[in-house]
Length: 84
Image 1 (cartoon, rainbow, N blue to C red):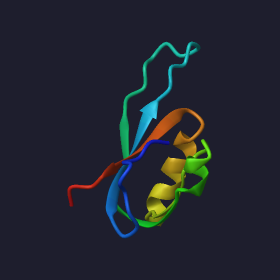
Image 2 (spheres, rainbow, N blue to C red):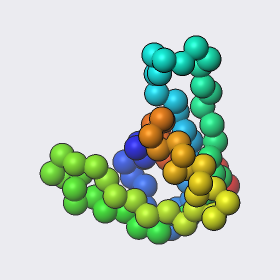
Image 3 (spheres, rainbow, N blue to C red):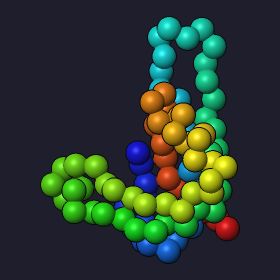
Image 4 (cartoon, rainbow, N blue to C red):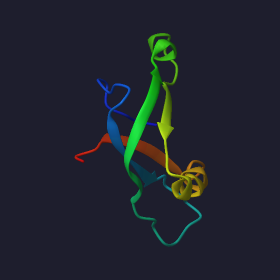
């Protein structure tokens, strides 16, 4: 997952799903907006300092959770600072 380096708890973000290349698929998939105006609950930067992934806790609306979970295996999830 990708997110802004200076993202802080309490900020609002949008979540996008960017499709990974699938050699078995004839039809290309499009980038999808999964959720808008999601609040950042917390960010764990400790693992990033050791070369690992960043842990982020988001307050995602229940209706969007299934879309996010279904996109995880096939897409790259990108967190973008929200304009709202």
